[in-house]
Length: 503
Image (cartoon, rainbow, N blue to C red; front, top):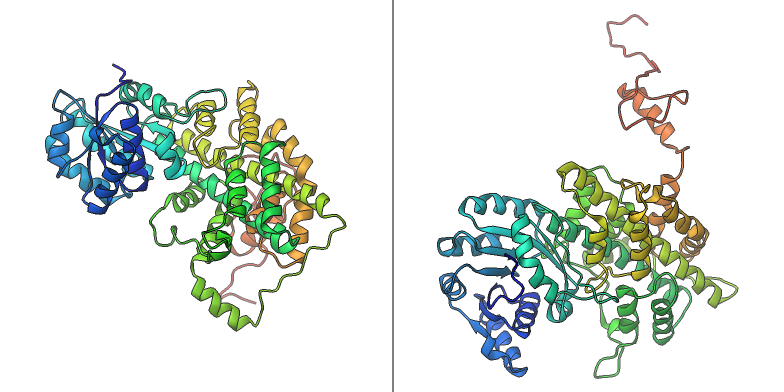
């Protein structure tokens, strides 16, 4: 039976995301019983609830047993988790398992690895306890106001909780909730992982664009903010979350009147300190499934290098190089900004194509039978990768009965957009290289497109090398392109000989 209006909700973990969700549940009429061993989290949530007059609907409990008893007083319970990934969730389940019973539903809203999700499902299912891996996107602001949800797991459990999630979720520009049941097993967390992989690619592109406009063209904060706002209002990047917050980041000042951006060091550490691993996992999946998600992987490597700021300082000293960059020489700044706009669109679309290709490869392997229009609906609001123009383009592609589901770039509607903007990204990358600006994600978007649409790659020479020393065999041009399987031909470039062989 579907549950649209649960009277009681259990909440385990009330950090920035969990506390926002607890307040959101209470605003929608639920009595929220929560447990968090961190007293600071407990105090802050209670203070926040009191400040907006809903403290009577939010109650702290002193143990896993107590929270289970409170939520399950009148029957089965629904419990949401918002804890760090991995061991903390296992510890929470261990603390609760003796107080759970058949019919209870656990909804894991952490950024968790899909394999952990499926392991817990296998462990809990024999006891009749259903475990839903539910990605939550949009940051702590959306957790408070209504995020994007990507729930995956048992079909009946999904049917039960979806009406409730629909009430809570962000709404798109047509007032449709940004939540759909994703599929079985760990598919919900996998889709959220892909979302974050796409996000990291797009974030790197945005950072590189900021560098182009500020260090390359010499635009000031307010001018760049104005550019981003114009992009977000009109053109192919309209209603794009990262463009929108980019404008805010450019123009926000602190109490002293200084731009906040100028105070921030150039290091991203969450991947290296492993507090958030969805980007790492996305890159691991590209290798495991042999999907060339070059922009996403390059963006992630960029983040890695940024984290080691002290090592970069040492390397810079050893190189003797300075941080001085040349200004981009262009006849008209306005015309070059138009090229950067087109290049950004090209690269954002490339990130989506790579992420969706990766998702499709996993979907085929696991037989999840994902509905990709439903996946896109998750990304129409309340999430970091919201980009309405790109989502509309992709959704129309998926609705074409003759579309190619395996390779996004093999669809004419997508290639048309990329091909029309190829010259722009090529020009922008060349100008950036001349000015010594770092553009790893943008340049990889360019290269990925070039080698994806080419049938005369220099890997022809690489295959010859492999056959020369490894007898790895090859296909010939007389044969059809074929599948990625070992060829049938070998040439004896240089016979193998030892000391006993006659010379």
